[in-house]
Image 1 (spheres, protein in one colour):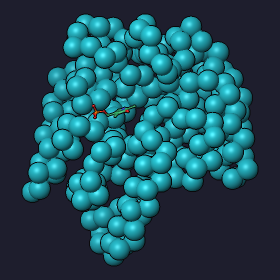
Image 2 (cartoon, rainbow, N blue to C red):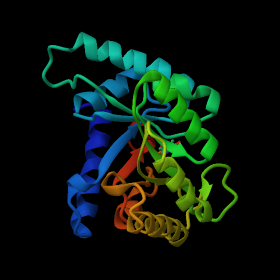
Image 3 (cartoon, helix red, strand yellow):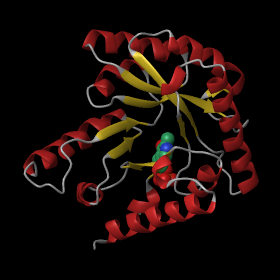
Image 4 (tube, rainbow, N blue to C red):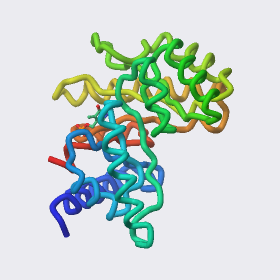
Length: 239
Ligand SMILES: *Cc1c(COP(=O)(O)O)cnc(C)c1O
């Protein structure tokens, strides 16, 4: 087993252990492998291990790396161990003028934090004749983070997105504050969970609203305990 495959396995075993400890099914937690700084060789290694969900935070890099991944999938189309397709997730801040380019690769965007961005995604998706899964990114940490809708604005933003015909609102995304203080991290994940339950309770986007994207290499254990359904993990696997 390669070094990367080994690290992936350790993370997956750890996730399984945390799920077991808090009485959750492993299947209720999807791991999105964040490629960011990873080499193409390392990315191929996680794909060989069965990973089909990859995440990127920069549009430029997304285009480049997804082209390389596509070429790899094509070369291996007769290999049953290699999936035919990868699901790409845009997880980073997205500028409106990069939406079109992003949609050429991604059908899932975790970082929708303003009405104007949602409208632009809807407009471009309509032109392309596609539907896009989106999550509202919420700033639950209370610190002056640059991105993410304020907690107090999230419900209304969700309602507005739910009226847009080419968007499917599938959940919320949040990032923990940059701190080693675990209680602080837990509090912000718990806040995201409460907001998630509130939106679900109001039945804003119906049954498709079922994802809570939170937890990275440093804090995925706490995120699972607080109800995450999607983890975004990079450095624990690639560095
Ligand atoms: C980089 C990044 C991640 C992964 O972070 P790691 O600490 O490398 O696991 C997750 N989410 C977002 C939005 C990121 O930018």
